[in-house]
Image (cartoon, rainbow, N blue to C red; front, side, top):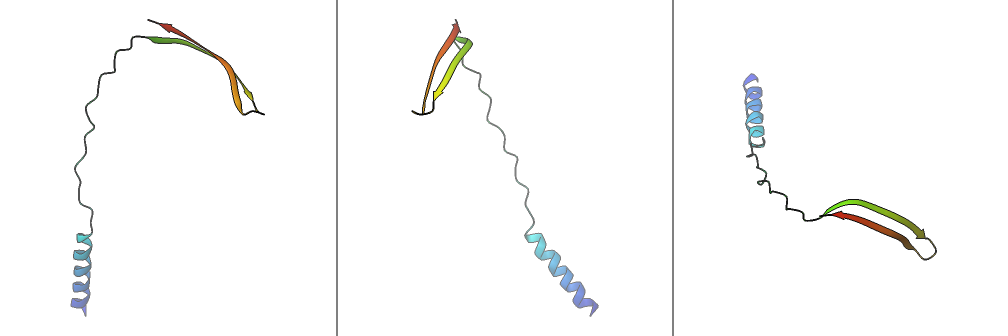
Length: 68
């Protein structure tokens, strides 16, 4: 009887080893890229926005201030 229990436990351990997760290699990030050179900088954005709910339209004024 003791041998049957031992054999059952041994088979159980061997069966679970087959389903164990295998180690995977660590993926590396791609090399970083330098940001492109900007020719114009946005210094200020002014937005005056209202909504016409009956017509479902936005109404407003947008001002952009640039710097070279």
